[in-house]
Length: 407
Image (cartoon, rainbow, N blue to C red; front, side, top):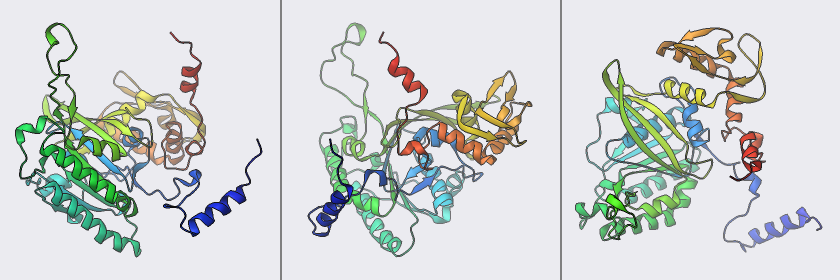
């Protein structure tokens, strides 16, 4: 088949756009990421990178102009993640942050600042209904977007926390489990209309629009085709208010769960687990746990150590020089009894596996930019301009899966 003349195609497309024969501009698929703006994942306490979140999302940070849905049962830490996201945005991108608190009881400033958030630059509103929240969101984007067009390209992070607390006049609390009927359908229609009208404004103003939602058991009146003692029980599925429009428009959809964090017999906080249910940029169904320590925010070192141990050995795309000048072709981190071993960072030495040494190990790893970038490239972290971001190359594991005979 003869190859198309690119100049003829480009000229035809340019004429179409000039004559307004197209309702929206065309651009080459290879240029998709050229205008993307990221809010980098950083540890607000140290200012350093945050590899666990990079791996969870498969990207260097949250992509501006997108929608994120965070869902969990009550008291798991949805608000805490919002405060962490504000801190990352403030430090890495000079983001303007707005928190819409639906429960009318925002936490104290010292709790918020424990996540690294600058509370002087975090603005809080307390809408009563979803209509109020969406109207405020639209007006804020209009006001800030106009200023940003004039020169300030810093992003906006705006969160509705949580949509489950924004009732309407005819809202029935008891009906909250029956998603999709009555006034709950009104929430879904309102949310759907908002996204249809303003999704381009979210994109053009570099807004990260976060909606947290409380999971509820979805009660079914139909007979479940199971047997034995579970014959007539509900199917156990969960849902949130405005499930369909939120799930459809979200680039990222995160489920959270938590358990007690016990240290030396004391309850010091929670271990919060994040799972990507939807991710339009990278593989979904990834899961990572982080320590949320009471009055101290998120402690990332432990989750970084656990991630690197689980991924070891990481084959680097090219040899990398270590601190002592030795070249290594892979990164490995493992624990042997009470000792940590990481040849590409520690050489032949081992160190006791305690908090201080773990912190020191991660600082040394992040200080070696070439080694860190090699790990990122091997783990396929997007947003750094690696070759794989434009030309797909299957990993060794994927090749093995493809050629493996069926069971």
